[in-house]
Length: 223
Ligand code: G3P
Picture: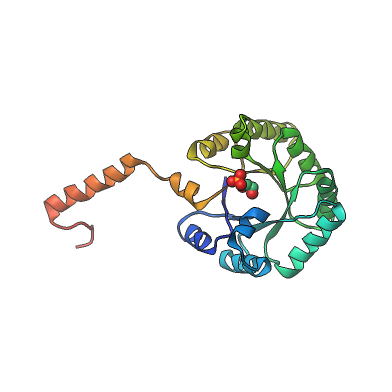
């Protein structure tokens, strides 16, 4: 299981990397636009913060294979690093995935809402497929079931493409996706921090420290 941060906010990325086992950062046009900065400089900064051992997923905006390929080359030349080109699973996107894989690009197929979209993207050569769990749940779909069925298809056909489950709003969605064998999840720092939260953990720690202090008149182990 790999955990990614789904943000372009430098402070969240720095904090996430300092505290948690992070495999990389995923972005999309909305996430980048939210920062309202020069996007090339911002993405270069993110690459500098995470280093080359961590993946940086950057999405194209083109809707023709020709433009997607041009944008992928631009991203590689202007930003570089350990990049994965995120490509939406439209017809032209699938064509672009085939072209870019032959050129050696790492690819994440994105905006996935059905298992068959994921299967076609995987057969075209995508390294990751990104199904959007919460956006499906929001319209009475079943995001976790889509993860389950993608995993089943990838297992049946022995595909190496990994699931990068995305669009999470709560811990339960992340937990259920993990149980279904999603190879990776991408989370906001807030959802990631909520994975650790439990009131009984907090109250247990409080009691440990109080008991220690009552006996030893200090709150730490070191004398
Ligand atoms: O980048 C894809 C996904 O993480 C988007 O999430 O929260 O906009 O549905 P969200």
